[in-house]
Length: 549
Image (cartoon, rainbow, N blue to C red):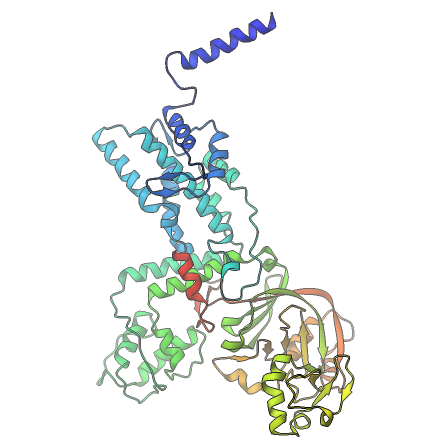
């Protein structure tokens, strides 16, 4: 009896849906969506209007979960949220992303056609409405994924970026469902932004540059400077320099007798430009100043885009309450705690053929009056050839030969002409030690650390890519004082004493502090001011090409 009743109910319900030829799905567009998705290629690929959709697994889950109901239209008419998503796709250029990755032009063509149909009183083709629905959905998924963790995989770069790309945390299907149900597309996409103030400020910088780009009528042909141009000189590049300084607001219009003469008014403008761009404001127009002045709004937008992408790669650990940040491209170390900058110091980083790597590791101890255990590569390329030329080289440099176990070896007993060298050379503690008087250790596979240096005059240089890869800090005593602030007994006097011993002294930190070495050639500060730096390792172009690919 019960079985017969169930059969009757089944036949009544389903015959009402299909007997007259109507689909069981919610609307004619739903039926179109189901049909399109069932035509997916065997390889799991679906191509619409020449575009291969990228997120088929998520698309199937999303539409199957809503019985193939369309997300962006009703009764064949586009909803407000469809317009909002189109706007967000266009706005993605301010994230340094390419709106075409999210089908911007194709989506616009559908919108234009549907708006034209509305004016003409013609119904939209339901198959096209379904196609647009799928394009918008896939565009949302692609944009959301890129906002959360970047478009480019840093692990595929030729240059060293060894900070692990953050993992995907957002459930993009659930996020889209929430965005559709709440009609809040923008708010849900914004929830994926990196949690750094400089990211949102960076978007505003790119927006401002885009407005400048629209007004730009200058010829940005490269200014070439063979030797520094100084006030009082005459040079063919001066007219272009004057024009560009006025464009960027560092110089007001003024009258001058000779357009090629470097006068005192221009001098003030040059110094303003240099100070704003992290250069020594000496008024001399050298290669760095010329390179900065060669940057158009378009090229600066590209530079900003590359660094917005780098911010999207950074993991959540970079937002710790306490960490040490070294921006290699800015030659600067910042020690931050609870959003306060406790120390900012100039640093010297690796020269171009000894580039400082990009990675993160916890700092765990300090070594006062350190030995410098010279790396085998430096021993082979620099020390051994120097000893061959000058047998007194080791004693003059306060160096000694030891076994790998630390046992002293008489340098006179070493065959310096041999191809093999089964020993280690180290420099003794002291003022002439290449590591200076203290080093700060965050053990890592690169054998990179932060240390003092006896060559303090190098910090006055504008270009400070001068080391073999390690990070030299300008004020190591102050840095040690801050790090040991909560350790009883470590007064400035005790630190100074420890830095001038003849033997090493190791001090463990009471807590491990993350050290993050990054490479940012652009950022915006908390006030929204942009900061651009030279691409000292020529790494920006590789990322830019992949972003535009």
